[in-house]
Image 1 (cartoon, one colour):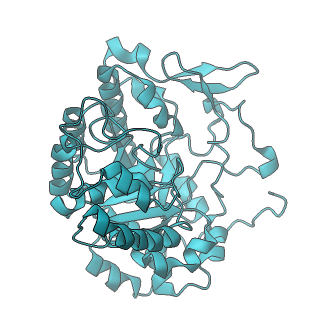
Image 2: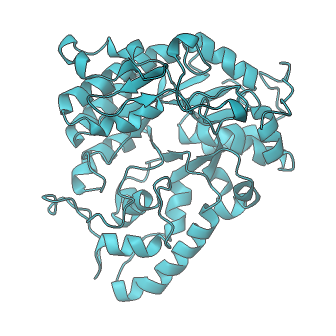
Length: 416
């Protein structure tokens, strides 16, 4: 195996959708994401009749902060992050990164606006086939994340099984729960069983949905399939107690709580989850307070779990972060093996091509074997590319980086 020093556990393939929509059936292509021009110049990606999303803050690689714009960019400009696999590897070299976990373009979150399940299925299969080929340029460096259609569990299982046979697809991204909704149900069981059996990591950019307290659980018409919590309390109510008042759209608290409160992680103990761009600074507080609240409320609610809530998180889940000094300082309170550095290239939170500087600021005083795990090895274990035992051995080995001899660019002092 390649000797990895730095793997971004969250990056994006921001190619023009025309790179993969041609793989869709001809009669559905007119409903696929398309490139349109916006007033004032520049490209935008539009899905159906929705408001076009201009190219801007998702493509800031190498720019000074004063150069950021929200529109006016074009795919034809061949901006960082918009090219083919060969361009991507060159960009990794420039940034001192050995590999990236590659999520779809940021516009992927808009796919749920499409109501036609046939179109959603066609988009997912076309994109995933494209991604398999894209990553074939350097399979050890381009680690693909396949998209699961947010339609129903039958479609989700079919696409999971298909990408499970694609060697360059390393994880499966859920935009919703497998049933297509924002709350988990027993209808999701075939998907969790398949993921458990295949050993494929299930991931999300932020969460699977259901982070709004105002939304009821279960979904209308699904009461017979709703996840239940054994005891004298509704799952949604008890889950909200354990959120410790932290939920916000980018934090996957309620997603995670549904998985262990509904027994998913007990029934399928091999499941592994990775939540990208969730950050980690909030985790020590939540994990501590969640256990405390569970102990306080489990008696009257008559709720029993096989493990403490925080242990489910530490046994099954990893989180990626960018520059999060508070989280790194409290890494042992979170769980050293549960956190993974990421660049989020080419989005505006990324510091490409200066990630070496960022990692040195974050990890310069962290012991070498711990740093190695956070920068690269933890995500390899989560993706099933390395065992936990191999991680312990490799983390203590002398490192001969694949990129150490590359010239490190000087950070532009005026970037900010």
